[in-house]
Amino acid sequence: MINHRLLFFFILLTQTTQTLYADTDDEDDLPFVQISSLRDFSALSKDAARNNKIIMLEVSASYCDYCRVLEEEIIKPMLRSGDYTKNVLIRQLEIDDIYLIRTISGSKITPSELAEKYKIKITPTLLFLDSDGHEVSKRILGVYSLDFYGGYVDEAIINGLKTINRRNTEITEITEL
Image 1 (cartoon, rainbow, N blue to C red):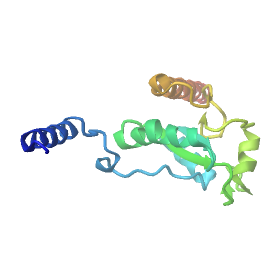
Image 2 (cartoon, one colour):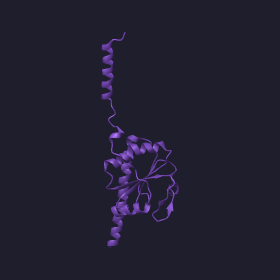
Image 3 (cartoon, one colour):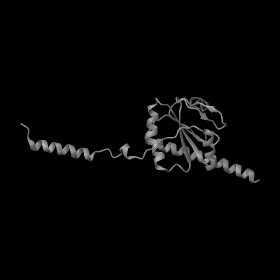
Image 4 (cartoon, rainbow, N blue to C red):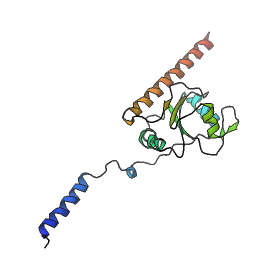
């Protein structure tokens, strides 16, 4: 025979435990963000030059589970925070997609062809580019430690911005002579 008091206590305990340990980082509570695909490198380049911004390009693949982890744990929170919009243009290049990208020169190529130009061997890879498409900071290959990854990204962005600003200062000094 079931002891009704014991059953009631057990049910009450499990309900309380579920409430105490509920997932407070529920993805459904976060605002929706989407990482924009790189479609028009020419327009992106002009935007970066006009606003003195760095381009952070995530090179990924549809079959890459680590790419999804990077997007959910690092890139989407960067977009949600709004802290990076002043200095960084964030785009995604999915190498196994079939659309055409307008390059800086105006020609059209596939994502895999653009990845080949940057000698991408691993996904995910984060590239940090200036408005001419040149790498201005050390690329980040793969996902090896999420605990420190955000710091590595911030460091790469800061170094890239310093490189861009140093170049712009040198150009200004030359034109003022």
